[in-house]
Image 1 (cartoon, rainbow over the protein chains, first blue to last red):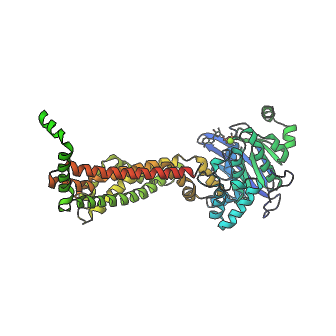
Image 2: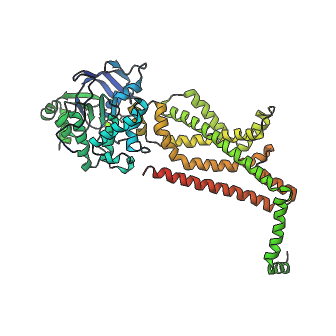
Length: 261
Length: 246
Ligand SMILES: Nc1ncnc2c1ncn2[C@@H]1O[C@H](COP(=O)(O)OP(=O)(O)O)[C@@H](O)[C@H]1O
Ligand SMILES: [Mg+2]
């Protein structure tokens, strides 16, 4: 990052800060007999940075993946910008265009250059002219300091670089919200910082983000709210200050004592 | 042949050997323009192989997409069942029997060109093997690639076309090329429906000249030459594909 104090991303502004983006009511998900999400209700507002923490296997990924229907909810309602995305008559693909996702293992397309990785979806789905898409992609690449990698292939990049590309690839679709599933968990420790920097810049620019992470520093610095999940439920929900300095339930205290060493 | 005979011939082997070889060569390939049997046969062999490969790849990809869509999403149940029957029947019976049935049963009354019958037989046969090769290629692509495509907003078919298939194709290219080489050699049974392919052409020369060695060796060498060229081309293509990733 060239300059840590200025935010490098512009926020999209067709919605008002504070409008409800996701309204989740009674969300349940089972895999066969295994009940993984048990009656989850919450809402995500425009501009919020919601950090989701909790022990492994508590359903964090499943919750996040339900929001763009990579997992199909068993029960419950997910309203996105006021419309029920679980309704089978709605076009899932159009919703997913507005909901970016960043994965633990990056999932860049190995057979395409970085530039192509970034421009494919806007060109094919948003019908953006090729040249315009390239220009936009180069802009994003400059902002994350990787413009010289435009013509490289993913295999030529380090993990941290790959994840920064994955983030800007998602941004190229101009999404209304970004979902992060443990974006730094697969990285060597020395590369975690560069990815968190990009994410913090994004957060400060007003991007709505849901982040599953074990990086408590990130939650404290830019999180507007923390959800603590355990056994398929949101057990505690509060501002980062309250969650970390004044945890209420025992399971959260126990969890924090383990991760905050 | 007794020992003295062998000693005599070994004294001037090259002169004696060469003149008989030359005579036989002329008898087999030059007299009555017999090389034409090989040339025309080779033409048929290449024509059949080329179009059978195209048909096989088309069928194979369609079947593979149906089968892996069923595996991944549980949709296309009926199509998947049809594909399974196709795979079972084709892979469970010899290609020669399929060719004979195609010619003597299915097209018994229709006056269909033998080349077309052969292309259909070998194409349909090859499609079954290509399908399983391509399906294994699709299934070998990390599920994360799929999810990345879908999360950007690509539909299932678009994700297949832009993201999964190009990678799957690259992975299975050697196996596919091998299937084509097998197919090229398999067409040598075309003679059974009275179609003059390369093998049959050589065999006709053998039957009219009573000389087996030269025509059959010539046929073998031509196959070998084509297979080696194909293999070399595939190696080159593989290397180029690999370079584009690293
Ligand atoms: N596709 C699946 N099929 C069956 N069980 C699954 C599947 N995905 C997740 N699970 C199970 O659901 C539970 C929650 O998983 P997950 O949401 O990945 O938890 P977390 O991300 O909090 O570690 C785990 O017990 C996991 O084994
Ligand atoms: Mg997880």
